[in-house]
Structure formats: structure tokens, C-alpha cells
Length: 89
Image (tube, rainbow, N blue to C red; front, side):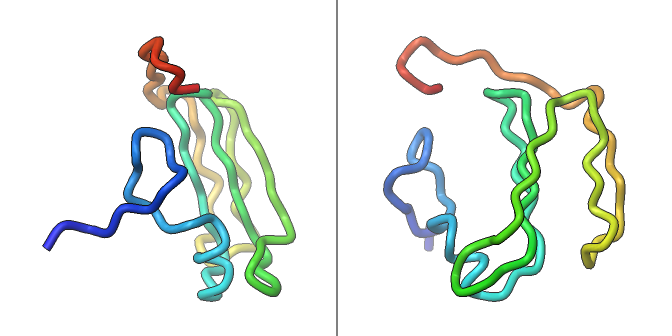
């Protein structure tokens, strides 16, 4: 069975709505976006939303210390994608 599709995502992504992870109590969510060349770290879930959001440009480290992962991954060398010209950005 194919994964569920959720509306509103770029390219019809197969990801749940943003608050679903927070509502489920997922302590940290890292989104790597090759189209904007940025990472988004969401932490501290509270009442179905994340109360903390950190944005890091590719080339910088993502400080995830203090989370369950307790990592500081570096984003240099992360691949970038160009927009297709179809309004993807």
C-alpha cells in the first residue's frame, strides 16, 4: 500500500501536516530543504505545535545538543536543487 498523501506540500510530498509530529510528541524534527538550501530544526513540542524553530543555511552546523539526538551535524556538502520554474519555491 502506498504512503498517504497530504495536501499542501511541495510536489505533493508524502508528509503529514506540520503539527502532526508535535502532537505525537516527537521531541525534535529536522527538515533539510535542498530547494532553499536551509535546514529547519523544530523542538519543544507543546499543544500540537513546536515552540522552538531554528533555521540554518547550508554550510553551517545544526546544533541539536539538548535534544534526544545530541548531535551537531554540519551541512557543508549537502546537495542543493534548483527550482524547476514551475512555481516550486
